[in-house]
Structures are given as C-alpha cells and as structure tokens.
Length: 152
Image (cartoon, rainbow, N blue to C red):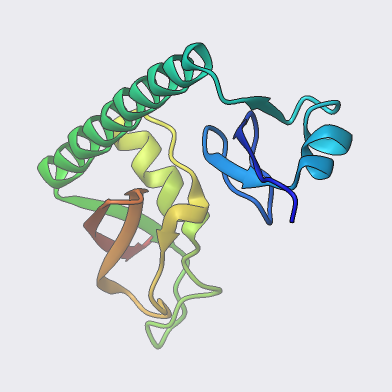
C-alpha cells in the first residue's frame, strides 16, 4: 500500500478541501495533478507558518466585516422606518408590488450606503401599511427594519 502525502491546498478543491487545509492524498494525485497545476504545496514548517498567518488575516477580515455589519444594523435601527411610495387603486390595493429593489433604494436614500437587493427578504406586500423586512447583512447578522408603504 502506497504512502499518503500531506499537502497544503492553495485554493478550494471541491472534493478535497478549502484553501489552507492540510490534506492527505495519494502520491500520484499529488505528483501528477496538484503540484504541477499549483493547487497545493508540500507541508513544510515555512508553509505552515504562511498558512497560519493567512488564517489569522482571514479571521481579522471576517471580524471587521462583522463589526461593519453590526454598525450598519445599528444605523438601520436608529433610522427606524423606511418609506416606499407606490401607486394605489381605489380599493387600497397596490398596482404591482413592493420589490426588494424598491426597499434597497429607500435604504440607500436614507443611509447613503449601497445595499445588495438580494440580501433583502420581502414579505408579500399588496396594500398600503407597515411591514417587517429582514436584511441579511452578514452570515451572522440579520437586521429587521420597519417598512411603510404609502400612496403617492
């Protein structure tokens, strides 16, 4: 039985692992694919030190992103309510619906910060009124805002 080889991945490989993971693979796989294509490096103390340094930087970056998301969540809560104006029929029913793009636009006007519309979860809005909207700012931070739909 052939001896397995330990390598450090330089990029994510679907069936093997993520960037920076230490994996054990067959020597032929390492020699014929991973090493020549620059997808992995042999495990050495210097490489392990680089991996640890990269992981520390990644953790710092993630913490900074989370702090930024928490600050934005606080800003959204401070503003309190966002208003979207839509055309309404005689019976109080909207022409069309309120989309996540409409909400993103209202938030951008109020906060002057761009927000990805795909992170906004909109309930079914077909009439004038107040609604709760969820916004995923970070994989650990979700903000809930009040949305007021009014006619113009």
